Amino acid sequence: MSITPRIDFTSALSGLFDLRGKTAYVPGGYGGIGEAIAWALALAGARVAVSGRDEGKAQAVAAALRAAGHDALGLAMDAHSVPHIQESVDAVARHFGGLDILVNCVGMQREQALLEVTEEVYDEVLQVNLKAAMFLAQAAAKKQIEGGRGGAQVHLLSVRAQLGLRGRGYSAYCSSKGGLVMMIRQHASELAVHGITVNGIAPTVVQTDMARHWLENPDTRKQVLDRIPLGRVADPQDVAGAAVFFAAPAAAFVTGQVLYLDGGITASQ
Figure 1 (cartoon, rainbow, N blue to C red):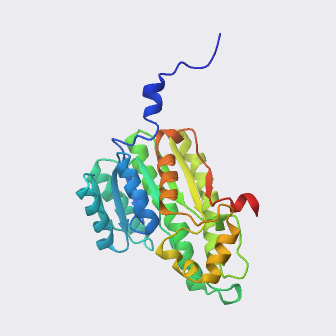
Figure 2 (cartoon, rainbow, N blue to C red):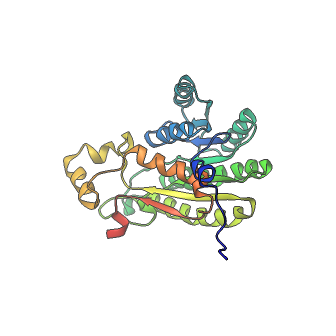
Figure 3 (spheres, rainbow, N blue to C red):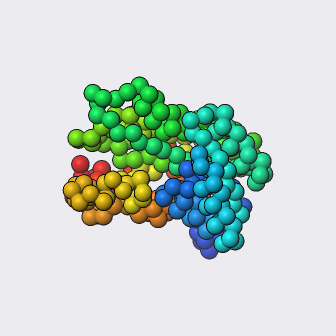
């Protein structure tokens, strides 16, 4: 006799990417990647909160989502302040009556060659990329556990979590993203008992304003494209699709993982 469970494929599989009834919080949700993720989550049915240091930009994204018929909130969140991080999570949960999904899109880079790295810059990059992720995850986990419905946490990383970069000053950035990989694994291990998954998305260069200095210079653009087997940089929608996957029932048995969304770089270098 088969031990394979009987599945009603129509009902089970049709809801793999259905986020209706879920609340998602997207810190950093007005950047090129974050805004695409916020829209993708909303289109999958989620209520979406967007935040960042510039409250006006966060509210503008939320207003555009509401104008398209989605339930959305925009608010301020300063990743340099742990109390402000915690207050933002509280505000989202209070507004929507709970929190199911965190997609952390907060991040920064301050390029300095190894011999020129200053303590001030190093500390700020780790504060925004790693420490803020820690306390966003903690505050979100408390709300998810209180809700008793499990949930998902997703952090934006970079291929620099695994690969160094010759000829550029990436000490702080690589340190922060590499540390975030291990934080994801640890948080996945601790939160699994609560039905909360924790994963990461690690893109290569994505076509956004943050990558303008790479893509508008013909020499650096060629260097970037020559490294990528698929022959193009990522588009924000490439990252948004991965975020919806990790947030959705389709990834219910995936935790502690990092998806290198890199056009094949880490497979070939």
